[in-house]
Length: 113
Length: 112
Image (cartoon, rainbow over all chains, first blue to last red; front, side):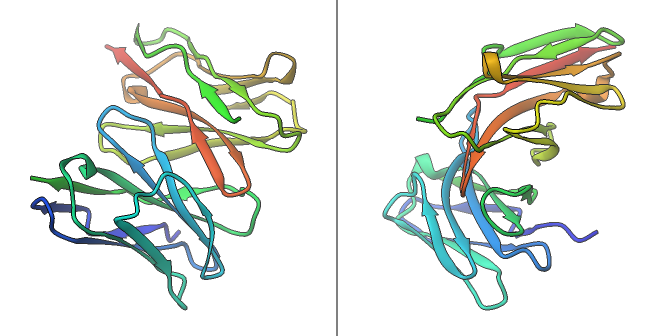
């Protein structure tokens, strides 16, 4: 069965650079979530989209932005990268709201040097 | 406020032992979901179970079982006859609407 696809799986950037992560949800899933997991930490909710509209916002820095496109894929844009942005970024998708069963992608590991 | 507490930071057992991972949650909502996820060393989050707040039935799936008790706000996870492949970080999570709060995780090491 198709799962949540995230790309790239690994990304290395310098401080102050910009990075974009992509997420392709499970077909027919209408809700996408972004989570950030720092080293040794639990995943922290960043932002979510339902039917291409932002539905909830968590601890997402102002330097980050995200959107969901007409084909339901989502992109997380991170600018002015800082060392502390180094983390595993998970995308998850679900069908409908409120919280259904969240299916997580394998994560994108961002390293900021 | 929503909060999930996994008091056990690390647990180490020998293969074939049974092990229980504790999860205590706080919420003011009457409708919510509880989850367990497994994160192996490879990093992905593997869904194990979802339970809604109205369903207190315990569940068994193979060597895995879950004990949901609303009276104590706990949702504990037991692995019977543990195996080396069970070694991972296990997260308990509380979900409401679009917000899922994870506990800090319990790192389980199963030694041969």
